[in-house]
Image 1 (cartoon, rainbow, N blue to C red):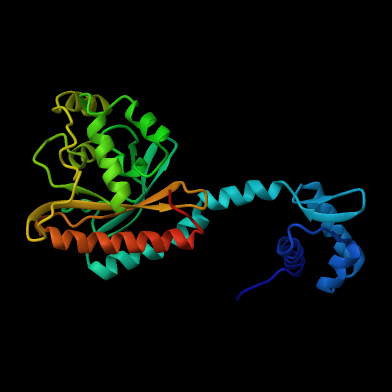
Image 2: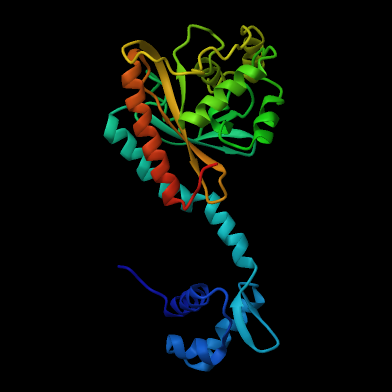
Length: 295
């Protein structure tokens, strides 16, 4: 049985009333009359909210929203409230195309898998939701590509997870192409230094000393698995591993990355473009749901 708390409802009503007119300040009488509350009850709630900095009271004895709500709003924006808004779009992408897809975000220097539909890595039966990977080259290019250039530079300057020759110009070309198109394509690669192999190694659960030893033997990363320019011929085949597009918050920050994982060795360029169009459309819809804006 659903149970409600009338005192809690009154607190919520007062906060919502003040939020409806954030540039106006209301007296005790105005708040009480608007919500049909008696003044002693209303004053008690307002006093408690003022003590907690959820509400401010000035010398004219009028009330407005307080600074503590900024912290709560920021936490909600970066936390599960936003994630709950985005998850339906992950489901929509999977249901529309029937292809595996994952949702990732950057948190405290790591790439975190927040949600998935279908296997994140073909043939891997692990759930992988909640798996964390270091945000360092070559991992995370699609998670920073639509961020400010200073953040891309900072990512490139992180100690690499695999040997990394000076290829900043190549990375810039991949990033610029992705920003222009709205998506980035990563192809299947025979290189043992591919991001999928590296991510699988880091998530393998083996002792860290063994992982570090294996990493030291990986060949240099040349970024060749990423598409810089899409082929002109739609009939040409492209060994597509995944296609990624950004989801932005209201500050224009790349808060999430939506990735389709076809793992199709003989996809046509036309098919790749069709997949990408759906990924971009769904990512933009998720951005709109967050009240976001792209760069």
